[in-house]
Image (cartoon, rainbow, N blue to C red; front, side):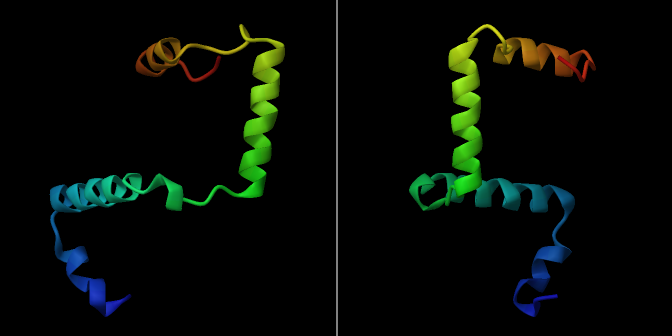
Length: 75
C-alpha cells in the first residue's frame, strides 16, 4: 500500500464515494487528455459502420434504461 494515500482507506464509505466522484469530475474536465487506444477507435468505427448499415438495429437509451430498471438483461 502506498503510505502517501493511507488516509484514504480510513475514510467512511460515503467519503470514499464522494472522493471517487470528485476524481471522475476532475478527469472529465480534461477529456482531451484521456487516451483513446487504437483498438477502441477500431471498435467505435466498426459499431458506427454497423449502425449506418442498419440504423434501426439498436435500442434507444430510454429503452435500455427501462430494460435495466425492469431487470431485463438481454436485448
